[in-house]
Length: 295
Image (cartoon, rainbow, N blue to C red; front, side, top):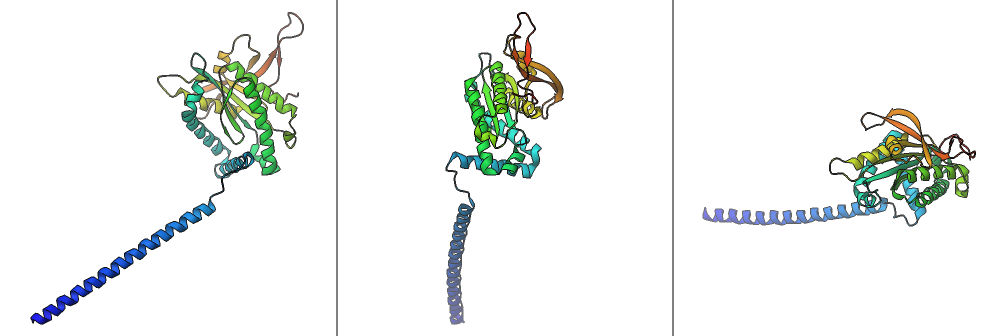
């Protein structure tokens, strides 16, 4: 009896040892399989990841493709919403830089622009030609922004967000941009004339309470969304910020609702003011910002 129990215990010990060895071996195999799977996933991700852009043209093409993808996935309204969400993020990251350009009273004038029907133009021209058109458009916008001492805060596809210290500088830069685009002197723009929508709003960026900065960014973007190609629209705050002798005049437009912003808002069309040639004659309004005007 004792012998039988001894043999049984021995057999159990051997069985436990064998099972332990099998378990350890299985765990090692599982770990090796897991590591192999992770390596395959990393290799696959690396293979699918597009290479980093090596030139400004490559970066522009990537930007165009992302924009087209957004339009396909969300439609134009979804793309606009995405742009506003991006602007809100930029407001947080770029706020310190914009504070440096704010006027003494803590206000800044924000300028928001984009190309009308840009997706259709891109589809018609193809990516290579569209990149050249974008480069010509960007050169016009940046040149006039620099001339009037503005600061490009951020770009997204064909859209620009710019900050100016005063409202008149923003309005004059916008009118000059429209004039340059109508004249179409850049050979890159001969492939396809572009019509740009511009919206301008003045607001406070220095405040103790409330996110005035974020709402002002949204206001500028919404004003731009109501403009037609070749037109410059501004908010009432811009009109109030202009001096009586400003080189621009604001013509009263419609009172509209702006998505995401409470109440209704009066929009104003920005035009160039030019004194009449005859002494004592009334001032003349020149339709630089009229979409139907011709240079």
